[in-house]
Length: 163
Image 1 (cartoon, rainbow, N blue to C red):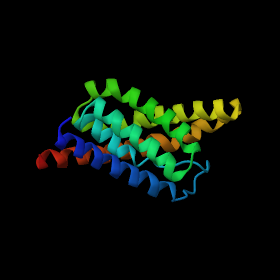
Image 2 (cartoon, helix red, strand yellow):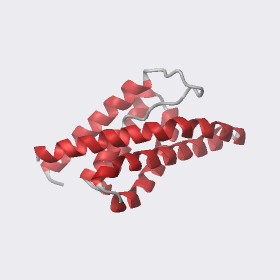
Image 3 (spheres, rainbow, N blue to C red):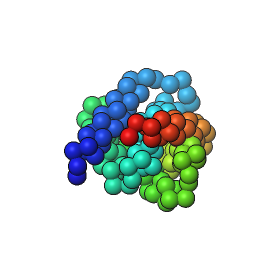
């Protein structure tokens, strides 16, 4: 790995981690108390389209592992399951979507993230009734994902001029 590539990945990991930790400190007045906007996913969507799947996976895993150390151990299972589901959905999307459609990737990725987190919650709590929260998660998550995807889209457009 070149020094430039390593530095870029480290910088993006630091930005994503900072956003993740800051967002964890902000309570949102939503019907499900643990809902977050997922703003750190801006970096994940950007990295998938700017750097590719390998670097994106490294950035995602580093952010999730370090984020769980800073915000508490239980976030690891939920962030990892949601993040990996989002990543797996973004893999094929990266090949078919254009740079003007990152908002779509963000929305679909957010839905996958919600499904992954719900799966983890049901397995950890052994409470299948938690699935009743899924419509609320998707109702909030899909528009938030479209927003994060749009932010990544704007970032990608701006960063192309800085190479």
